[in-house]
Image 1: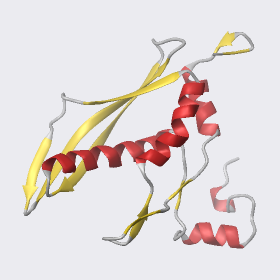
Image 2: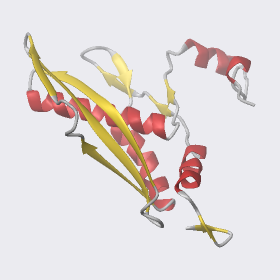
Image 3: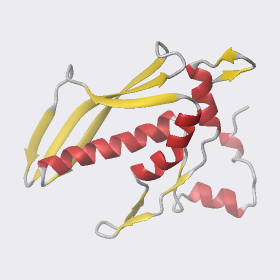
Image 4: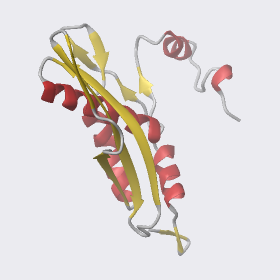
Length: 160
């Protein structure tokens, strides 16, 4: 992909995706624990076309150079390990951005504990890395902002 016949670097492509980021709404309900959440699917549905459009790939891998912790606490297994995300510019594969992040999950089934850790960590990595705001209808600041009819962020959050 080029802009004005010049190759686009990975940071410009990342900026293009971050500039298109719209909010993800916590609109799924966990009936057992009565809280709202968003899914990895919601984040990926939004991001995959933008990543493809920008000519990027995003890969995840478990890191083996850090300790992989598995502990049983009462009936639950707790799993903690590190992952690496690598964003690569397909137009110039030498251009990469890598990020490491910690995963943590628990469940009575050890495989579900790992799956939970991975899913949770990746969905939050995606929203933070690509600057996707997470909307929560219970956030009093969001409600105040919308109820005042403001089209912009409250003054204390504006960036100039």
